[in-house]
Length: 74
Image 1 (spheres, one colour):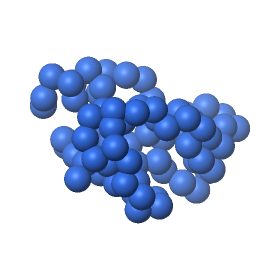
Image 2 (cartoon, one colour):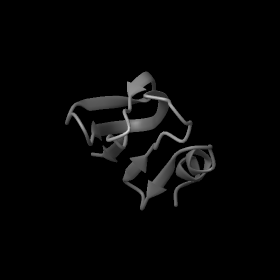
Image 3 (cartoon, helix red, strand yellow):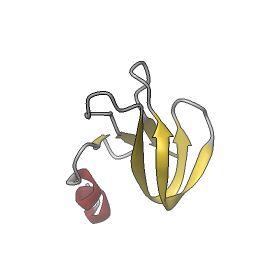
C-alpha cells in the first residue's frame, strides 16, 4: 500500500478495502453524521455518486443507521 494510504488506514473509524475504496462506518451509538477525511485524488461518493476532490474533510457527512459512508478513488 502507498505510504499516504498507510497513514490514512491507521486513523480510527475508517478503513480501506484494497487501495481504492475507503469505508467510514459510524461507530458511535446514536450518531447520524460523521466527519470523513479524503486524501488527495478524485473520490466518488458511493451513496450519492457525487465526485469530491481531495484532500478534504467532509464535515457532518449524513450517515443514518442504514447508510455506510464509502468512497471510491477514481
